[in-house]
Amino acid sequence: MNAAVVIPAYNASESVAATVRAASSIPGVLAVIVVDDGSTDATAEQARGAGAAVVRLDLNRGKGAALNEGIRRLPPEADAVLLLDADLGDTAIEGARLLAALSDDDADLAIGVLPAPPRSGGFGLVKSLARWGIERLAGVRVLAPLSGQRALDRHALEAVTPFEPGFGVEVGMTVRAAWAGLRVVEVPVAMSHRATGRDLAGFVHRGRQFLDVARTLIMLHAARRTPR
Image 1 (cartoon, helix red, strand yellow):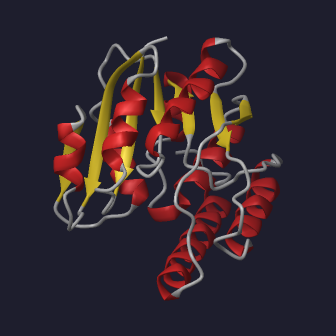
Image 2 (cartoon, helix red, strand yellow):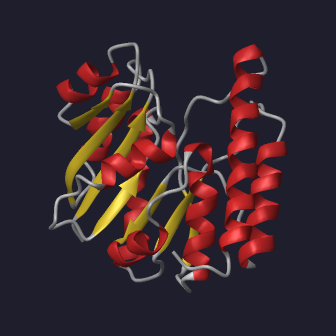
């Protein structure tokens, strides 16, 4: 299976190069595309230096918009897309497990389930809301509703795009995949990334995430009888 990797990145200069190199080393990966979502640091330069094709957004437009920009640049010969967060570093190599679920014909959408961190960086409220909303709207219960580590084949990509805005992208992706009758499988992966802290910045991040997830669930509820 030929795949392209899309990595949305915002101020990830410390980790993006290692993530790109690890993703590039996955068998079958044809291209790594980093979408620099209006970073104010050297994210674009670090990603380009590691061998990624870089799409630079002038303003921070959010994760969903960044991913939409990335998938518009997929090489036509790619059978699948692997979505990875920019802060995975060397553990991005575990994306191979997600692609294997597609190539083994076990899934149309494979979601990476990361090990529980030593200490929680958040309060679980956003995850609980996302899990509840997915089950209520699509009848699917998932362990990692907010995991950004995902692999989709072309058919699944067509069914779930364009992605929902902001941090609602994963919830929208899962619900729309279930609505389309696609096989959604969760795969344990030995990945690690920076946890959101309990400081002011962490509260702000969780607040934005909660609002985006809630907004997405409301939009999906309204659209459930109106196919895109």
